[in-house]
Each structure stands twice: as C-alpha cells, then as structure tokens.
Image 1 (cartoon, rainbow, N blue to C red):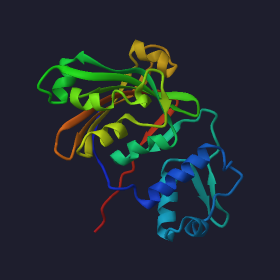
Image 2: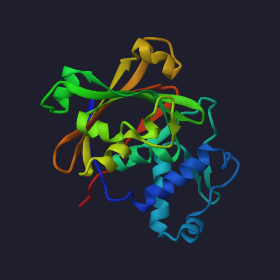
Image 3: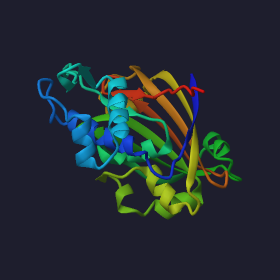
Image 4: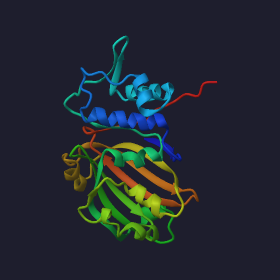
Length: 253
C-alpha cells in the first residue's frame, strides 16, 4: 500500500500546463510517431514560456513514456500499442482538479443520504449520516474509473442540486471541484492510499470488466484549509485503461 499527502497549489506550474496540452494533443493523435513535435524553441515562442519550462514539460512526458528524443532529429511520440491507457501524472490536488480537461464525469447514482458509520468516522462527523454518490470517469468514450464519493451532509446539500450531479448527467466537471467551490474554505490537501484490489461485483459492469478482476484502488480523504475533512472518495480503476504516475524528485544541495 502506498500512502501520500497531496498538496494543493495556487496554480499548476507553467511546465505542467504545457505538458497537459502536449499530452492531450498526443493522445488525440495529432502527433503520430513519424511526425516531429515542436522544438523547445518553437514551444518557447508559441507559448511565451522560457526554454527551461519547455524542457521541463518534455522531461515530464518522457518520464510518462509518451515521447522520446532522437539527437539531431527532434522529439517524437511513442507509437500507440493498440491498448491505449489514460495517462495522468499526479502530484497535487490541482492535478486531480485538472481531470476535467480531458475526461468526463458520468453520474451513475446521484448524492443521497445514508447511514454509514465507517465513512462518517473517517470524515470525523458527529453523526453517522453522510451523503453518498456513485460516479464514473470516461476518456475517449471508454470508462476507466468508478468512484464512490462520501460527503458531510451540510456540505453535500450545497452541491446535491447542481444539474451536473443529476442522475445520468455527463459533464466535464469533477466532484472535488464542486466541493472546493462550495466549501467556504479551500481544499488544502488529501490523504491518499493506493492498493491493488479485485473490483466489487456491483462496479464491474461500470468498468467493463468481469467481477473480481484485479484493479487499482485509490482511496482519498480530502481536507480543507481549516483541517476539516470534506470528501472521501474511493475509486477503482480499470488497469487496462488507466496508468497512474507520480513524478519523484530529489532535492540536490
């Protein structure tokens, strides 16, 4: 099991925004393997960023296995394997908020009030009542994640009537972005655990896999700037369609 605390940043760094743009273009097929990507100089001019920013964006995509460099020729996208996965580098809550850039949210079960002792305890609530909803994340027409979201009743009531959370609704939203906007205090971070787990039978069809298929299970407990727990999200990811990547850096003196 991997445990992490994801910080939230005021705004994603310029290199990451550039990497997101290039990643989207590559996954959309705008740069087949035989077509060179823009050079660092071209990116610098087009995006009005520094050469270092452009180089950093390329380094991130190289680390994800999306591109490779050939000395004297340029930078190219890796050929698709025919089993394309949704790739996302996650290092902060802002990265999770940016899921809305290239994937959509489908509401399977809208928020409703239930008694759940375990979820209420993790959210540090005074009662056992929570609001829970079931959602699916889709990229390029294929579902890759199913998520059960648990919210404190008072906070959940503020967003439950949003049309983007109505039964069957499909939008480019994220639940955490709606919570962040309605919470009063901004989300400051999340406690995260990653494990491998068989998909529960009731979620298998949503992920288009057989019941019991091994999946990536990611558990996130978000908290705001005041230290209050504002959302518990338990997600199962189809590993044939999703790759979770975290960039690790070393501080050099």
